[in-house]
Length: 372
Image (tube, rainbow, N blue to C red; front, top):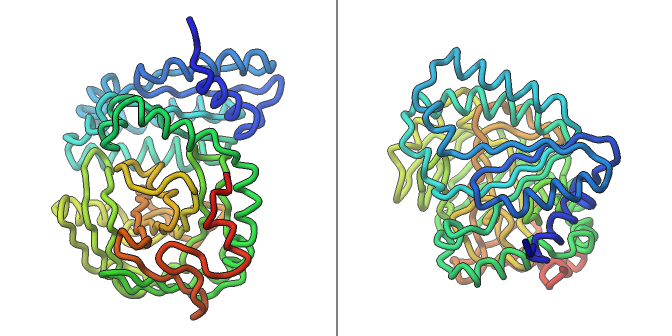
């Protein structure tokens, strides 16, 4: 079988750069959807040649849906505990997401979605996987091309260009933004339907440079939990828990979401933000800087990296940028501030940092260019 050289390059980048896999280490390869097989096979081959021990697993939604649709709370708890034990026993993890239908779990009941988030996401992902060396990516199948509104061939060309860029070079260009964010107290976001302020003082800024998510290209921190005030309108649709949400508008007082609206999906918002006490507060604020991702495709892993965007996240914070908020949800919602999406400004301590998606501070100007 002839392997696409772009797949081989991606697998090599994941093994060597993203995970820095070493001889004798165990790698968990988690494949969602049969389309992910070519990349999975290359990862198994390269990991083995590197002297590591690969373990692979297919977690297709077509198989998991019968369980998640009918399982009791006790079954959810036992299912999560079983998968958590596997995750605890490995050194590194790579998740390849390529479901044939990304809406497959959308018709689970609210109760089943809650149990899935509370146990599987929280126990296996949040509490265990995030403590490992890990990387997660999508795979360019026909479902993704359809969501992006592109032909399969055009989408694959876009995908491999984005995913195989020079992340080490982009990483160096991100360093001044990390330093500036860590000196900043107050952040203000202004855009159509948006005027929101909060503090990020004392919370680390973390650059995402191809070692956790592929594609990558963001710097994240977290707002001080009770400091968020104002209104924000997200102009990028979001596919979350199998449902599509459009034009989500949140009104926030003392850190808490007090009113929520959406052009599509509004009936689900109240349930999501009532998942637990932390679901109505924010756990992440991030700035997207990937030079090759310019337009949304209804896939958060891509959309949150859009150059000229920010995302703000109801739910749990990350331990390395911790504001103390804990929740079973972590929902990245994206606002693009480039002119074709309405424009906008980003201020740090009342200083204009970015206008209409372009940085205006000298040390950040390289992030406006094609740094890949």
